[in-house]
Image (cartoon, rainbow, N blue to C red; front, side, top):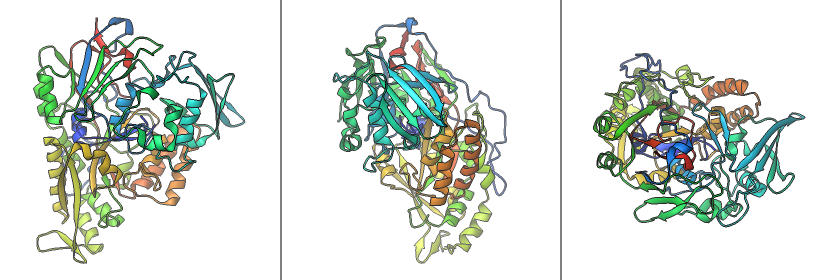
Length: 574
């Protein structure tokens, strides 16, 4: 899977290992912290200088509890709803879709908090990987008991259908990412129908990310892939310990119940409930005991939930990153010189200070879209190509023909240099961040028009590119960052929200995906990302820890980094 947009009130999307989300959601997801130094005038805003982090950014905190120590029964309730596009393989889906999907579909491959691959024997009873003649072969043996809810056996045809829908051979499929799938030359039946043999052209060290879940063959037609899951669920095509009990199209509430057709370990919970609430209502609902878990949005929300009787705070590493996206199809942002000037005008350290004021945490400012500072091979690629330099930005805008008007806002050919910035939801932190960016841009003669938008509009804003600047986030679901280089930067990829790039750069990026050695692939990915960042259409702003308020006794829930606990293991301690 690949990077998925995260929608506003959640700081924490399956198919793109990186999920995208809006800032409002960002806030609701968790509390993150970045370096809180304030820069002004000239100098680099990307140094990450400041006090040492007060918490290890790669630490996990989720009350790991063995299955046999989780009691049977109970309900687990959080804020959440279904997405406009519920198929996580679809380019228009977000983290929300991936989360909902995982509760009533296969979780076949997961990762430990630090990124080690874990095969779920309830789906894959055996996995063998080999290289023959320079080409990789993967043999997946499916559990003989595995079956979709409609009675269709889960076998090699599900793997083949998932591959065919995502490999790019049929452009009618609105696939989130073809990377990896396009490298597979065939999927065939093995010893019997319960065995799939995958043959790759070359070697793909991140192949496991392609089949963490899979599609029912009936869902893998163009019509169903693109439209069947639009605001709808298809539990008959699902599988797993839970299935849909309630899917309310009016309230947006969703309830999952135990699946009588599940062949594996019984789910510990009686019910898993998602309640559709605005961000600001979530904290109050948690304080009133209506929710079992809530994301801390900022210092104020953390203060409100900290110390509540019967609850605790869980905080740890965060595979999230929030970035400013530039729509290069916008008339005012088509000029790369203008985009660079705007990036030079944004004081990332000040944004970090606003985001995490009152939190005892700091970290270097993010320097990459594909790797986090706690991962092996990470490099600060942003600092290599950009510095905070508003005075230089003014000169660049002058040279580009944008001259200050009477009100201080620059004008060119009768058009003001004004940018549309959708702000989702009612989160105060999102408003403060938008206000700060507006003030920074105003100082160089650019007007930021902050437009209130509903959280429900998130997916449409992205798919229709209804923005000039947009603050959104991504969550990594696996540790293979280099694999998602194309999702962020290829000019012909719908997941590239900016539309920036060139055919020549696309080819360099795709060459990276063909490198079989992970160390060499990461080295080359950093090199190519520095080129891509010089399109000046994407600016990483902050990352930080994940922080949650949780009722005591809730097991296998919290800051998990790359780990997604299996649904049947979530519940309440005995």
